[in-house]
Image 1 (cartoon, rainbow over the protein chains, first blue to last red):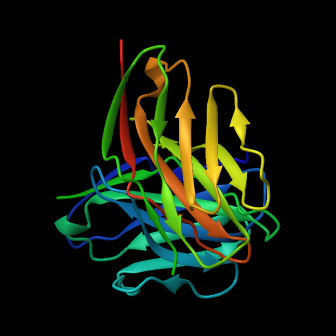
Image 2: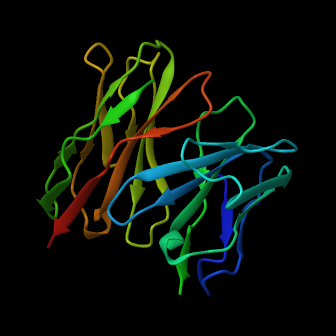
Image 3: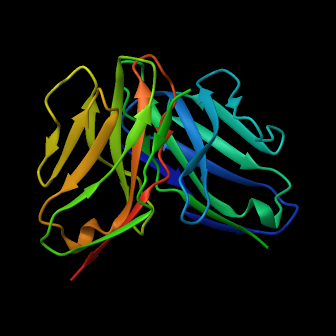
Length: 116
Length: 114
């Protein structure tokens, strides 16, 4: 399958700072990328959907000013957690889909964010 | 809106035996895809198997097979000859043909015991 690379895999940041997570599709062009948050022992919770060159669509309850998503190219989407707080500590996962012909999504390795 | 339900939060199986994970879904659509994803301790989501709703034949990938019952809206995963490396969270997921987002079930934690 196609490869999605997510970086960093782990990050620790101080409360009040911002942290950026990158999601890259390595061998295909991703017209749509998705950002999820996963709490321990729970399923993936969709945060937002981003399409290249347009604004992200956020799910209800997700603060768009806190979780900034940029999908500037067909191979890169970024999630910036702004003014991070300890409650933002979580596991964040991106996924990407190639075009509209396939329904399969490919996932990055995830990022463990710890805010201290 | 569609929903996906996995009624077994945790399961265990002895190595080399067979285990079946349940998944039911609710949708009014006729054309869709169903997936089983595996999330091992590394937390990398891995696609295990995919089923197109228009196909009557159950999908099979080596030791993994599904029992797709469209009328019953059921999509169970059978793992044969279980291996220690099969220990993971398993998520059932659904997407419409024309949809954009996967809908995930709550997951089943599978432990393969030696």
